[in-house]
Structure formats: C-alpha cells, structure tokens
Image (cartoon, helix red, strand yellow):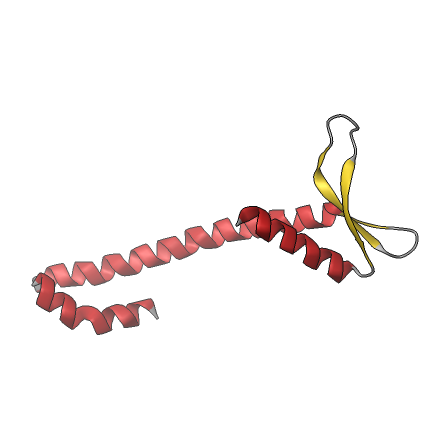
Length: 108
C-alpha cells in the first residue's frame, strides 16, 4: 500500500525535486526500507506492550466465592500493604472492560 502511494507521487516528486534517474531509484528504495524497518520495530514494541498489558490485567482481577469478580489497584498502599478495591463486577468481561477504561484514561 505505501509503495503504491509513493509510486503515485513519483511524478510530482520528480517535478518538484528534479532528481536524476539514479536518485529517484534511491528515493523509492530507501522509502521501502524505512517503512519495512519501522513496521518490524513497531510490531515488536506492540507485541511486548500488549503481552505485558494482558498479564497486568489478569493479575488484578480476582474471582470471589460469590462468583463475582473484583478489580484491585496495581499499587499497594504503603501504610497498609493492601491493594485498593476498584469495583466488583458480575462477569469477567465487565471487569476487563472497566480495567481497560481505567488504563485508557490514565494514559490520555
């Protein structure tokens, strides 16, 4: 997709920059290499961040004897050594949805 867009932009690039044929070939090749390199790098970063986020989600949700799920804070209170209760939910999906919302608003 990206190289297709670049190939569509080649006429306007040629008109503005007036490169030689060798320079134009280098522009097209280097663009492809940079896009591929950034996709690989960002894919690895996303994989690590996604796995870590999933592991953190699972560690905070506990199932109670009543069958409900309770969401706890990640950080412990230094005075009591306990985690803060962030809510009790009837389903695991509701607890995960609430956790994602909490994390979204913490980041944004």
